[in-house]
Amino acid sequence: MTNTPIDEIFLDWLSANQKNAWMVIPVLAFLEACPGLGLLASGIILLSVSTILYTEQIVSIYQIMPLAFAGACLSDHLGFYLGRWFGPKFHHTAFAKKQAVRLQKGEAFILKYGAAAIIVGRLMTAVRSLVPMMVGISGTDRVRFTLIDILACAIWSAGLGLLVVGLDSFIP
Image (cartoon, rainbow, N blue to C red; front, top):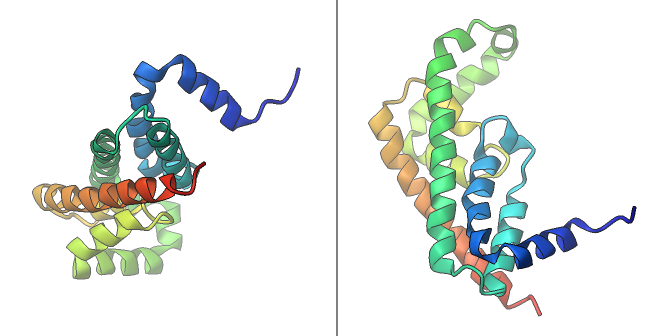
């Protein structure tokens, strides 16, 4: 058995499945912000795949941005509602008791800065998968979170679009 680089495997898959290649974008956007999984799934994968799809003219930038937006928004809302559901129970776990000071600071930051914390959290890869959950735990209103998250995901997907189009000029 030979070792085939992952990029070659992906490019072969793309060639064989061009009509369905668009489905990869919302899945990767969801995974990179998914509570727990987001700490393992890098945003660079989404950026790389989106750039390849764009440069190969399989998917347009006008398709990439809303697809990524949808995956990101769904993932953020999953995190938010998990936070709301686990919130009351979470504070009584051994982990929460050990990290009480940090968690209180995190919740105070979210409550103090509200919208800015959600928007900045969406733009920071290191905490992207955690902020919606923390916002849910903090008891933030559902409608308020949804409206702010829509704005945050729109800014994030526009940034992704700019990066994809910008990287296109570096790919031969």
